Length: 398
Image (cartoon, rainbow, N blue to C red; front, top):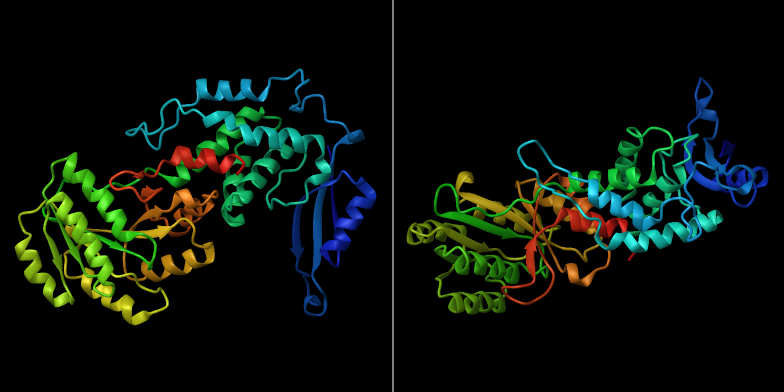
């Protein structure tokens, strides 16, 4: 593989230089801006440097696997079968969280993507900031990176994951090792999900917070139903969402079905008397009003309300919709992180084909993931967030 760097005053000019010298099949691997140095730097314009690569003689090296139906190398399915047979991942020595991990459906869509793009490398115009030089696996790493980007993983985190993987790989590592390493890294970044526990001091207050319209009330009903029916826990509902009459009635309906009490409160001052009434319960699920992350007064009211319960006696879950734009998710999580430590619940997974935001927000906030919902049916259509399943989807096509 022939890899060269080209510098020009603009990105377009640098890419044109690369195409002129390396040909139309040249792949742009990295684009960066070079700031001028020295005493005259204030009077000089920055340069754009493009790193481009092309296979020697427009064919793949003998030792680089080319995934086509007529290839003499292992087929993609054979590689995936090997990964399924060999891979056992764990978060630490105590918890063997991931056992005999299977990459679901053989990552079939990524397979076809690789095969198609390896036939026409001229399609590769996207960049990876940390692309390794003189590495026959660079093409495969680039394609996996592009796959993450297509599933809306933020470039910053895609680069971080690929960079960490690349730094541990030796030259000419088999493709199955690269895929397994990226898959494992994503699973570890997502982490082991946090769940509500019946252990510890009782009652335990479970607060659900988040913006309007994300499905907090329905999510509460789903989770509470599981504890009431499966664990036979003694549960109660509290709602402070008095801004919407429909929200109170919705939770009241669920309370009547489960045969559990519902307390409606209108101010933080009322919480003390409610706590006394519910002192014999195992879990108290608290529904809060949807708050705008732009409204500081509402945020302060929420902080005061949650503060009525001692930190050791409460858990807080920030409920977010998987369909919300990433920039809005950043603003929402930043606002709540100023006052609270929370775990993350994602709703409406059935309404989106891209789950990159789950990884993005997990890496941005470092808050543990917990539950996910994927439909309106109560008590069904919810469960613990599955890091393996998300990793598989991020590495597959949409």
